[in-house]
Length: 202
View (cartoon, rainbow, N blue to C red):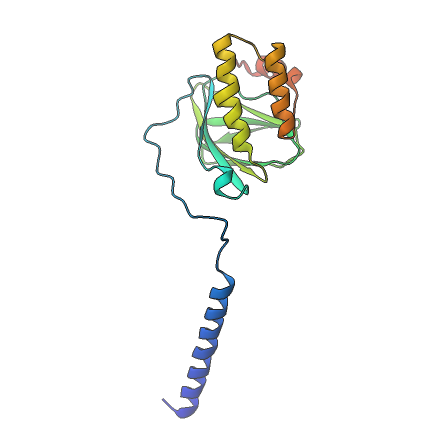
């Protein structure tokens, strides 16, 4: 190798090393976040109550940046009443079946392998109008919505079932309203029945 080429190669190597060292100093990662691994679930999620969830990534694991759940919706089953989030952005991925999503006045059928994004501030809901179970993953950004779902599905809904209380019971209605308020959600229960009737849901 000629001296000129050797000097040029040495200079380039030195610059690359300096850039790498500088990059390593910059990209030290976020000290408040830790890596984690979630193994596959041994059994599929069965919608024994029409709509069931399995908490996956928790917001406390991601410094409240992200959380997600797996969900399963039984055939001909309505999801939550139409509602709107003040702060939450939501992304759905369908693994199996078809999930119908209402956003504003538009219905989108999200088939297996499809994605659907719902930004905050838009009224929406979803359901399964098919004859087969639908399964998917719902992802949440900018809010610890997994905490909302944990309280709803694993505290309030069992409490209603145990006491044979409908959501309209004064005590339960207050608890549900307070939960919505804490997480910046406005729910339109009066719009639910029209969707149930139109698509033959339960």
